[in-house]
Image (cartoon, rainbow, N blue to C red; front, side, top):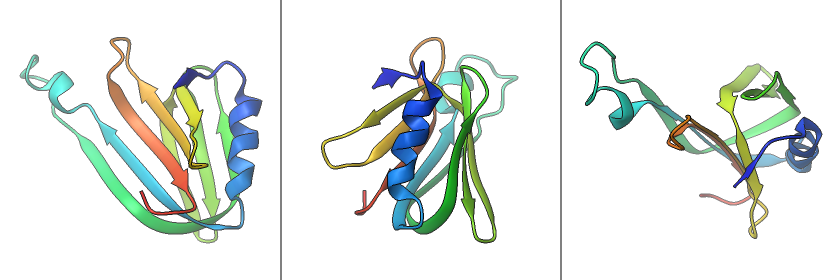
Length: 115
């Protein structure tokens, strides 16, 4: 994955999925990175995979780390903490946020086929 230095690159990559039915993968975690080393930190996370959505607008905002939002008909899908991106050989857009140790904290991925 590449570090995001230019938000426009990610914004343009999202445009390939606007107004198309796509598959969404979204996860957040601090999982094993936190609770095993700090008993005062609560482990939290969320995970959805292969949920079909259609969004009318994709946006990326902020400064590193970034916020990415997908405007749906009835609301928003939102991920904060995005630091890296990749458009892979299958045409999927993979966005991720890594902490200062390189561990995954958040992922938002879009694909025209199931993951």
